[in-house]
Structures are given as structure tokens and as C-alpha cells.
Length: 213
Image 1: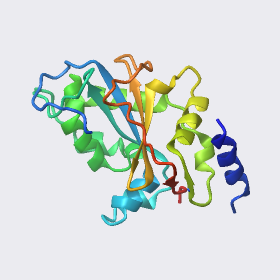
Image 2: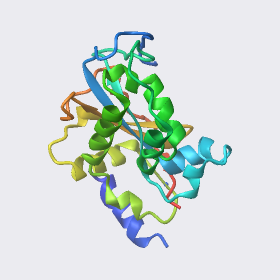
Image 3: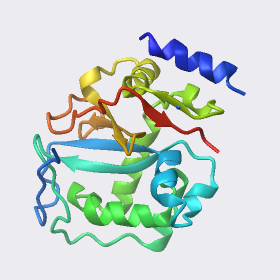
């Protein structure tokens, strides 16, 4: 826990092998969910700003990347389903927590359809999962970039969510930056241990964390 006080001090004083998957599987046949939260400043720095994404014009922190059906090992995608695709109104309604309607549409097409739910029910479930997580307030108060181990972010999430255990979430990195927090949930949205292919924490000694702008 030694890094968390350093992060808190900075906030106060600063004016830092892929999973196996399938395609076309039967919808609704999976074991648990992965709730993926993306740190918006990282995505914007690496991709969003170059795309002129409207997400990067908003002061967003952890946004919902997706709620992914998962097997004990691996995950389904692009499942066979007769479910009606979401309307523009339904995807637009998710932009407040997902950043853009386009992400909501893509996540439904690749992952959501595998949940075996209607688009309306899947998005409602994804919102419930997102709102069930206490996102560390300390990270919203950063004023300058910091570099730190990913374990600091994990510790912050564990402190903000009593009852979670370290094997129930993982922090990922991309291009030397803190990228995502991924929490494993049962179908009833209770935290559960992640599969071994999911628990692959970022091992960088120091990773960049940009502040919210």
C-alpha cells in the first residue's frame, strides 16, 4: 500500500499472450462477465484525439468500454442471435458513460449479442454494472500527469470497493500508459475471481496516468 499515499500526496501538492476467443457461438452460453473500464485520457492520447472523437472534448475519467461475456477460458464474440440490433436512440443513450454512441454499437455487435439479452436489457445491465463500481475519487483530482505502478491503481480500486479481492480485477497498460480496469462479475453482477487468461496485470514499473482535462 506504500504507493497510494504518494498518489494522494501528488493530488494534494501538484498545482503520472491474448485470450482465446470464438466467433458465431450460441448467445447466452457463457460463464461470467468482464466489466471493462477505460481511462478516457489514455484512449484520447493514443487514438481518440487523432480521430477528433467528441469523447475527448469531455472531462471524462473511467468510461465503460464494455460488459463482455466470458468463458472460464476465452470469450465468445459475434454470436448467433435473433435479437434486434439497438436503435440509434438506444446507443446514443449510452454515450454518457461510454463516450460515444459508436462504441455502444460496436460493443453490442461484438460482445453484447453474446449475452442472450435484448439490446435494451443488455445496455440496462451494462449501466447497472458500471454504476455498481466505486471509481477512485483521488484519480479525478489529479492536476498533472504522474508515473506509477499499475498496482497503485489496483489498490485504489480495492480501497474504494470493500469486499473485492485482488484476483477479481486487473489493471492493463498500453504504450506505457494506464489503460483499463477490468472487474470480473457473475451473471448477477457480483464480483467473482477472474479466469487465468483475464488476470494479466500490467507489469510496468512505472506507467503514465494523464489527468482528466
